[in-house]
Image 1 (cartoon, rainbow, N blue to C red):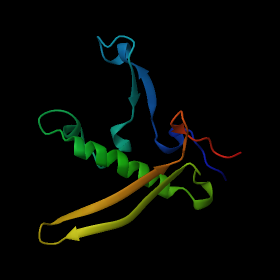
Image 2 (tube, rainbow, N blue to C red):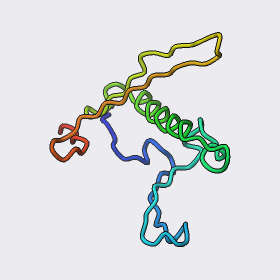
Image 3 (cartoon, rainbow, N blue to C red):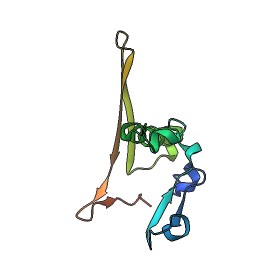
Image 4 (spheres, rainbow, N blue to C red):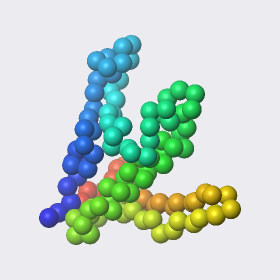
Length: 119
């Protein structure tokens, strides 16, 4: 097999929707739609309302993208994207852990677009 770049291959239900169709008053804006079930680390209350938390939203996306990359067979991974999870440190006293995830992208210069995969 080889790398499949199509997002729907990796995130079930991902789509782009017109804002005017789904969010009245947004005009011609378009929205990236990702089902909540694709981000199991996140629940609706963490996205909206009084208990929302941008840190939890960021972690859910970063963790999901790492899981997608990690689930690919090594031979099927893209050349222009690499993801690492080299360390997780636990603090038993504070009952917390630090998870470090690094995503590296090769980009075309000067456009700063993700580089094309080799043929």
